[in-house]
Image (cartoon, rainbow, N blue to C red; front, side):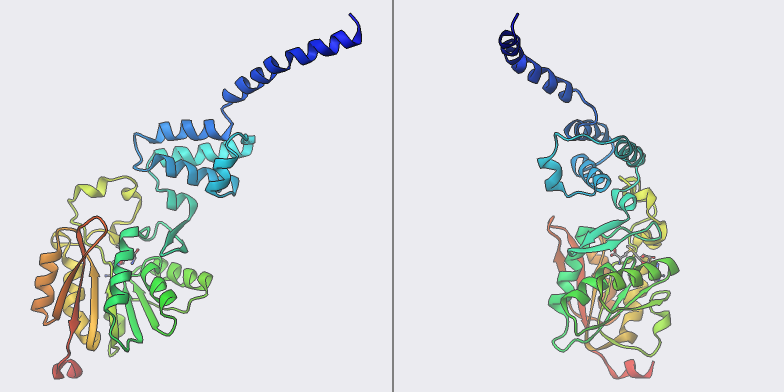
Length: 313
Ligand SMILES: C[S@@+](CC[C@H](N)C(=O)[O-])C[C@H]1O[C@@H](n2cnc3c(N)ncnc32)[C@H](O)[C@@H]1O
């Protein structure tokens, strides 16, 4: 057989070689699309968002964005990347939240560091930020966020209203430190205090007080939901059917609100009436309830008109 004939035979074989290469790649378990498919299948039983979880973990391992992942899903992971992804996947399968694995979570489009000392900020809480911005008194300058955790609410408010002086408190020392760290990372100034609700704020008044306190009944089955057991109970549950901390805040807030000051609280979907009664009983006015985007009443706000007795306490 001459050289010409050999070359022509090689070219004839090219399509089948390409098909073979494609078949080999299709079965390659380290190819991104295969890694994702297998991970999503495994996560389906335990996660509410298997596709998103798998993509976020893989993006972090590859240090790439989700768009890159989609475009390059034919590429393969190297051995170190495959090991790192497997390790995270196993932890996620045991229930650890993606935000704790990655150490970060976006809130109000702000990238926040998160840690197991406090709650992972939820998208639902952005509704409280919206309500606080809408209901803040016209000349508002002083704002207090009680139980700040990562600093999510306080930092979102500061981000939107740079002239506001925002104070944030948490009883947990590590949470207060985390809020300070997030403020520094984002270049937003925040006064952070360690305090059991309003205890460290004697004599101080604010135009706006916001809080997303613990409000889950200790027996609530939601505490067994995906990843929740990894979050500290001190950030989630409250006594008296979940109303204990809300009650404490409502009762003490009047001594720390300016006249016409606003209190805005996040609460459980079935707690709006009880919170409304607490606010009414404490002397608040213009009590308004606010729905989240799922149609549930999850935020209640009210105005403290102020009276002479405020200034004697
Ligand atoms: C539901 S988490 C909210 C965290 C954050 N504000 C958010 O929305 O993501 C409640 C927070 O309140 C804090 N906390 C619980 N009891 C407290 C108390 N007695 N005084 C101050 N903070 C408290 C917890 O440490 C936790 O960070």
